[in-house]
Length: 49
Picture 1 (cartoon, rainbow, N blue to C red):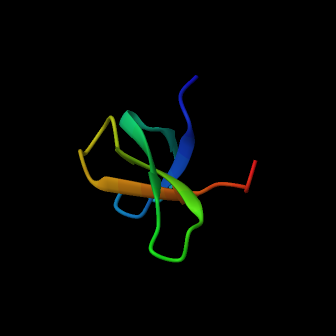
Picture 2: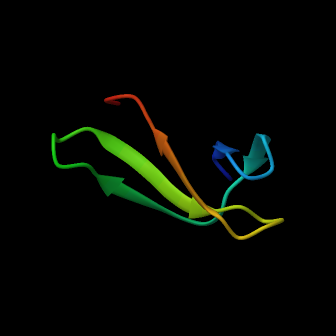
């Protein structure tokens, strides 16, 4: 399942490409990926599930 994130370059929500789950310094989970159209890095903070 592709996570959706906001691309600041395209100014819209897109499905991330090459997504990977990461943990931020403060311990919160996040998803990091790339925009499929322009290749800009995208980041989305997800819930604590």
